[in-house]
Image (cartoon, rainbow, N blue to C red; front, side):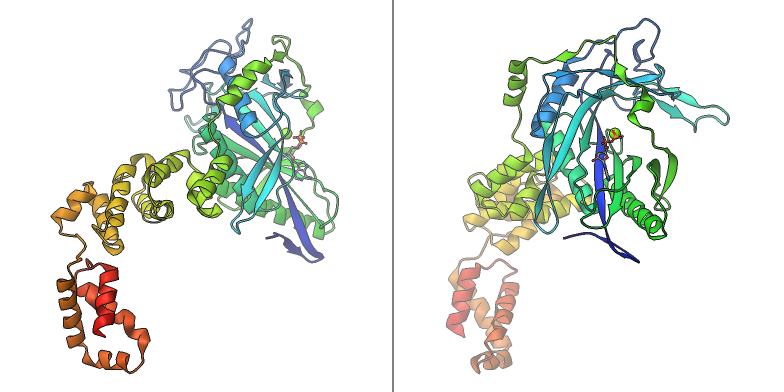
Length: 482
Ligand code: ADP
Ligand code: MG
């Protein structure tokens, strides 16, 4: 499935590299003990270090480093036992120190890989260039006062992981799949909550275009895009803009741009600075970060089963298709729910119920799996009732709907509403006889060779039995009578 933009001179290929900023899950900030909770009152979570008071010294938070290493391990990346913190100088009103502590030449995590899954079922391995740890800045609030701007430093000093991809992505779809997969891995690891609305995950989107087979051309960077949909739209808009520039005989200049989601266009923000503009230099307040190999090994042993492994296991152990397995493992809570339903039962049926009726119900009611109106135990019990013949597959749908509505247990619903499957052959024969007697013309047609109307009789008999007939016995009785 290749993606191309048609220009007057032919097809253009799109080249994309993503820099994703992921906020580290940690009680405290990267270099101070201040809290990190979202939604606190402005400036309620600011230490002297975060406010850059003179003479304050940063002390690195071990848990933030552990989270970065876990993430690196989860991305199957090289962990650098020696890394270094640098000062990246720039001026912003919400950056009181005048520099951000980041990692430049020696990041904590080197090259890794993220496998993405595309709509046509294919997969691609996307290179991760590096992951480095850095501080977040504060926030300027321009909408609180008619003539003044306020500064909220709650975010100042919060630990971020910047995860940089190789320019391996070739379409908006691939970029979307990359962020979804990265977010899924981060959530499994418990290293970032992946909440894009709260800004815990944001992406800088680097885009260039070229003729197939050419070397890379100049890229532009679209800053701070905060939803997957906007990332995909920004790529489309920016690639189309660049194609138009080249086709008109112009030159794309390297620059930083912003995506205007209301108008679906990118706008120039500033010409792109190079690394030397930041005057990076090793932070003299911080020693090189030296990790103990045994400590890293301990973190590796503590990793949970990640989506790729889980998916492979679901295919192997439960005989699911790779696609269904992929859907079920995208969120850990769904995978746990599925396994609770599938354990000791028909796994394919369990998968069908979870990805079918259950997902539809969650969508319709705006709920998540954590507050599903039907528990895994209840759904499992309902499947048992189908398996032991208490109810048939058709009635199971009604029982499920009743469970959603009332929250009652499946057994109670079956008893109260009299939904037990009818296996009494006398009752089935009587229903068959009644249907045949009411439809003499159809019976004659069927006996005259029009066998495809058989389904009509099944439907009528089931209706006569309020859906509760045992399908196998109904078929037997019908065939006999016809
Ligand atoms: P810088 O240090 O200036 O930000 P990097 O080499 O770190 O530059 O690249 C930043 C991002 O830009 C990476 O995600 C990379 O994959 C991407 N990138 C580099 N070259 C291109 C290109 N020609 N087209 C699209 N993306 C690119
Ligand atoms: Mg960069």
